[in-house]
Amino acid sequence: MASASAKPRRLKWRTRIVMAERGVRSVSALRRKLEELGISISDAQLGRIIDGRSSHFNSIVVGGLLTALNCGLSDLFAVR
Image 1 (cartoon, one colour):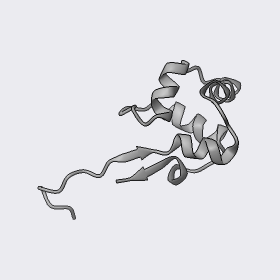
Image 2 (cartoon, helix red, strand yellow):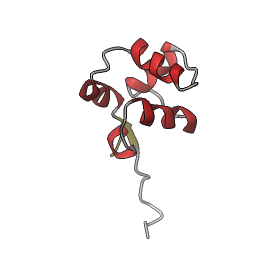
Image 3 (tube, rainbow, N blue to C red):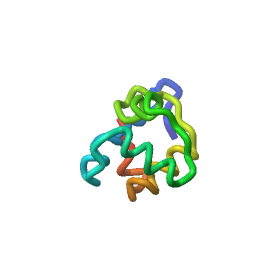
Image 4 (cartoon, rainbow, N blue to C red):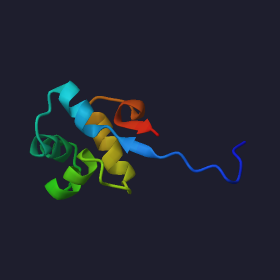
């Protein structure tokens, strides 16, 4: 059990790395893949996720990213 003074571990987005590994070259290309799955997100919102500037996320968007990029949670996030 963690002590009361321990800081919570944070997740770091690895979306850009996974995109590169999967040959997805742009925010727009990834957004189109998400749209094919029925997930609507703006380029600006997706850009914040890709650049690791998003501190909140929607489980539907995360699920779409996992599907569109054919990866698992451990690929998409790193714990720091």
